Image (cartoon, rainbow, N blue to C red; front, side, top):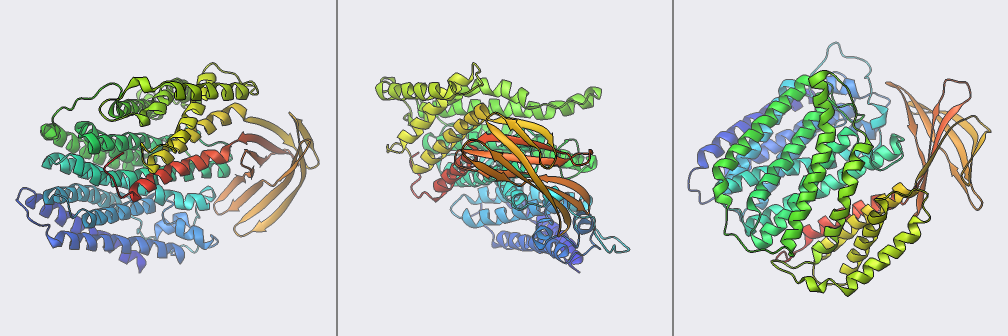
Length: 626
């Protein structure tokens, strides 16, 4: 029964979408004094229909309704209830339905919260957003219907990939989608404001909250995905330049640039066209990520589907949206031009513009590294993978000037600043940074030419951001985010300098000596737990003063048959001890990989601080200053 409810609800939602597209287009050229209540009413009905559809899918998973093809392919009666529920969006069809639900909810909230805005602007935003919603509805109903039925009804399902059965990954997709889908509102609102010509300070204050919401959720979503990969996949680090990781990072770069640009538009009424371009680009990157993940052309553990026809649909839809956006931009760009306001080299707006240039460069490097292997395979059939060295060699040198600009940019004044003030106090901080960096680098066995200025500038930026907490030049939200970012950069650099790894094959009773540590494999315990068999090893990591017990695990799932490795991690404020082991064919031997990862917890904490800064900015009442 839930299959029928879910399926027909989507058709009703599509009818509502088509009605709203036609209705909003017809009235968009009229002089409107108020928004027709039917717009909000029908949008609320559409949101309700999509909600019913999504709840129907969740119920089908909860009750293991294997007449539903999506449930059959992604669930099993032995799965714990939590993963039955999260499994409803842990697949291609369910994830698209969740995406659609967030799209409709965001539009409904926009209509309720934009009452003070121009009526025509609200109608046009509704029009563009409904075009996106209708496209996703058609895509789901034609190629990815989560309510397709199978007969005869199987007695058991195939099960969800055990790697995806994890609490962090269960909440990772919904949060990430909130970030992705928020860019659709920004996209639609930007096109609407371009047509109505109301791009200015008031619009910037209005749209900035949507930019912040998208940026916060995307940041947290990326963080959760990174933490999951760290302990679940056994990769042993915070970032691996996996193609699907890159797909989420690219719109984050663009959103970060857009957030700073909107601030300039709000404060100085500058960068109007650039704001619109960034809005279009951010949404295009979010949609491109949807295409890449679902087309099957990316080789990644994160990919949802392996169906090029689905990817072709999304690619065609994305092409139509971008073509529409560019057409609207070129025919209406004169409306976004304003009086040229004088700015000087040493000013806050110039620093933000330079920040944008760096973000676009970082974005370009990640974009090329992600899609170049795809184009190369299409052109000559060659298959290559672009790994960390490519990104590190291109990105790290440009981090040096980026850190320099970020150090003094936030403290600059609008319009014009006096260079003479950058003297004694900043010079003293720079000397302190050099001294701290010197003592750190002489203890590091790794010495690279670029590591010296990077460590110095990272400490300099960190001390500058701490110093900003005692000034009244900027809001707490900015101080917290910038401090979090400086802490993130420094933690990553120190982590890369002082990390080390040890690999070996061991059997029970063996011990290995590595640096000043002794690794001992005491025993391996085999247990049957829920829907998998567990092999849990007891290790001890000893040095002169301490003994650290670590219990990594190998899980053997029967439905579907999968072997996974669960890392054992001992976390402190200073470091992580990371250990993972795998079964070898040779009887009694196991492959072990031990890593010492300094400051890992501060990488996670600094990202949380960055997000908290965004939350504080949304909660801030006085938005007249930056």
